[in-house]
Amino acid sequence: MKEVFRISKFSKEKTYFFVLKTLTIGEKHYTTNELQYIGKHVNSERWGHADNCGGAENFDDNGKKTRIVYDYNGNTCFFEKNDSYYSD
Image (cartoon, rainbow, N blue to C red; front, side):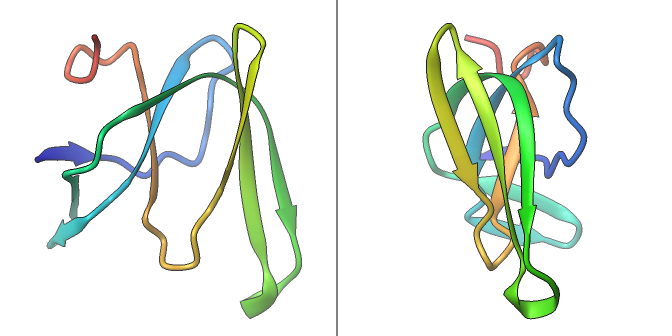
Protein backbone atom coordinates (compact mmCIF):
# COMPACT_ATOMS: atom_id res chain seq x y z
CA MET A 1 0.00 0.00 0.00
CA LYS A 2 1.37 3.43 -1.00
CA GLU A 3 0.43 6.88 0.22
CA VAL A 4 -0.88 9.04 -2.62
CA PHE A 5 -1.63 12.73 -2.97
CA ARG A 6 -4.40 14.71 -4.59
CA ILE A 7 -2.61 17.25 -6.83
CA SER A 8 -4.63 20.01 -8.47
CA LYS A 9 -1.82 22.22 -9.82
CA PHE A 10 0.45 20.78 -12.48
CA SER A 11 3.80 21.86 -13.92
CA LYS A 12 4.41 21.57 -17.67
CA GLU A 13 8.03 20.64 -16.86
CA LYS A 14 7.27 17.56 -14.73
CA THR A 15 5.85 14.13 -15.48
CA TYR A 16 3.10 12.39 -13.55
CA PHE A 17 1.53 9.16 -12.40
CA PHE A 18 -2.20 8.51 -11.94
CA VAL A 19 -3.99 6.15 -9.55
CA LEU A 20 -7.31 5.87 -7.75
CA LYS A 21 -7.04 5.95 -3.97
CA THR A 22 -8.51 2.91 -2.24
CA LEU A 23 -8.31 3.97 1.42
CA THR A 24 -8.35 7.16 3.49
CA ILE A 25 -7.16 7.23 7.09
CA GLY A 26 -7.60 10.64 8.67
CA GLU A 27 -6.18 13.14 6.17
CA LYS A 28 -3.94 10.61 4.37
CA HIS A 29 -4.85 8.76 1.17
CA TYR A 30 -3.55 5.32 0.15
CA THR A 31 -3.82 2.93 -2.78
CA THR A 32 -3.32 -0.75 -3.42
CA ASN A 33 -3.75 -0.18 -7.19
CA GLU A 34 -0.93 -0.22 -9.72
CA LEU A 35 0.53 3.19 -10.59
CA GLN A 36 -0.03 4.37 -14.19
CA TYR A 37 2.63 6.58 -15.78
CA ILE A 38 0.87 9.27 -17.88
CA GLY A 39 3.62 11.74 -18.86
CA LYS A 40 3.50 15.55 -18.99
CA HIS A 41 0.42 17.60 -18.24
CA VAL A 42 -1.08 19.27 -21.32
CA ASN A 43 -4.26 20.98 -20.11
CA SER A 44 -7.28 20.83 -17.80
CA GLU A 45 -10.98 20.67 -18.66
CA ARG A 46 -13.91 21.75 -16.48
CA TRP A 47 -17.62 21.63 -17.26
CA GLY A 48 -21.01 22.15 -15.63
CA HIS A 49 -21.72 23.57 -12.19
CA ALA A 50 -22.74 22.41 -8.70
CA ASP A 51 -23.64 18.69 -8.63
CA ASN A 52 -23.54 18.50 -12.42
CA CYS A 53 -19.90 19.56 -12.76
CA GLY A 54 -16.91 17.53 -13.80
CA GLY A 55 -13.33 17.77 -14.91
CA ALA A 56 -10.50 16.02 -16.67
CA GLU A 57 -6.73 16.32 -17.02
CA ASN A 58 -4.94 15.63 -20.30
CA PHE A 59 -1.41 14.23 -20.50
CA ASP A 60 1.10 13.34 -23.19
CA ASP A 61 3.70 10.59 -22.92
CA ASN A 62 5.82 11.07 -26.05
CA GLY A 63 2.77 11.11 -28.33
CA LYS A 64 0.54 8.79 -26.30
CA LYS A 65 -2.40 10.96 -25.21
CA THR A 66 -4.15 10.13 -21.92
CA ARG A 67 -7.31 11.81 -20.62
CA ILE A 68 -8.14 11.22 -16.95
CA VAL A 69 -11.69 12.18 -15.93
CA TYR A 70 -12.10 12.93 -12.23
CA ASP A 71 -14.38 10.42 -10.52
CA TYR A 72 -17.43 11.64 -8.58
CA ASN A 73 -16.18 10.26 -5.23
CA GLY A 74 -12.89 12.18 -5.27
CA ASN A 75 -10.63 9.12 -5.58
CA THR A 76 -8.55 10.50 -8.49
CA CYS A 77 -4.92 11.09 -7.48
CA PHE A 78 -1.91 12.41 -9.41
CA PHE A 79 1.68 12.77 -8.28
CA GLU A 80 5.03 13.75 -9.72
CA LYS A 81 7.28 11.03 -11.10
CA ASN A 82 10.29 13.07 -9.99
CA ASP A 83 9.53 12.19 -6.38
CA SER A 84 12.01 9.40 -5.52
CA TYR A 85 9.25 7.65 -3.54
CA TYR A 86 7.50 6.83 -6.82
CA SER A 87 10.31 6.62 -9.35
CA ASP A 88 10.90 3.44 -11.36
